Image 1: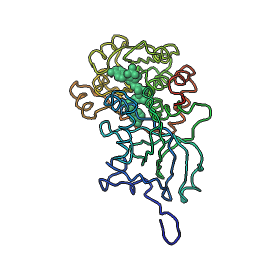
Image 2: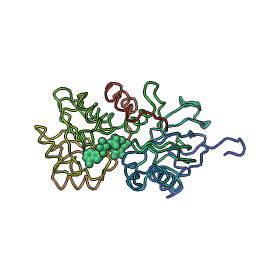
Image 3: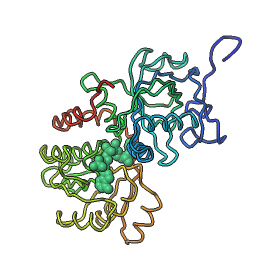
Image 4: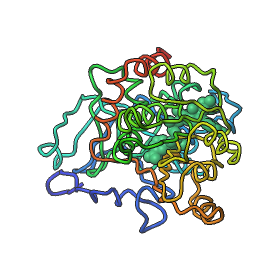
Length: 357
Ligand code: NAP
């Protein structure tokens, strides 16, 4: 606060002024952030209603807490209490939030198309979002959704999106969380390719299959790998024609997965997209890709070391891409993917639509 004018000073646009430890770290790398719920001149203060915990992180926490909603809530409150942000120390991943804008710092107000009172979803990770939780209101174990009374800060550089009017809020939250995946799939796929999607029946997997089929066209082949073909999502994928083949395999078993894929396709994949929420699936992805093919690791459970040394070990010259959470226009591309596939949209409504707690 400037004592002469009563105005608050602007912070660093990337939020570095909020880093408490270690000094010199960027907010995402930092162990702990200052989560004081007061907006600097270039920050946005939000009242947070729901957290969408990243799937790899939620699965790890749920496993540790025996899938008990009460313990999961306490665990999340403890992480946020210690770190000033929802940054799972085991998986290193976060998620995003939905809430209402309480205040926009005075130096931002005239420069952004957003007003106090509007409801938004954050499009930057919770691993770099200062967050203070007052209470946990509920935990939905099926979707990884956590209802909270909390306050969060968005930095000047942060991405956010207004909630769409034609898509249920819970569905929009689920779609925004994985928005980078369909947008990058659209960029990576081309006509006639063979694409393998591992974890095809999850949120990102379904949107990725939809984009991959649209881009590869009738001569292309999209092969989904799922752990269980009897899931409702698997039925939707087949019925709406966004996969040409569905293979049941545990992707932690690299040989089994790749042999089933080669049994279903005349050739190995030009592009493999990994959308699972468990560790240990790097080698299956590598073995499903052809020489000079591409692997897109969207999964947060991906180990750089395992992927790099694994590809070397099996002599596969492949391009491996880290799934950047951000792609230009990703939120709109992800929503559009949903709108263009009514059966997938209906499945998301059944699974992720906001239910009263
Ligand atoms: P999700 O909805 O939970 O889907 C994960 C899918 O993987 C599920 O369908 C799951 O099947 C399947 N799966 C689990 N174990 C498997 C196995 N051993 N073999 C084959 N399939 C398996 O997750 P999501 O929200 O789409 O997220 C997918 C991944 O992306 C997660 O790791 C998440 O953390 C990550 N993510 C990355 C970014 C980024 O910026 N790169 C952003 C958000 C999320 P079951 O449900 O039957 O177990």
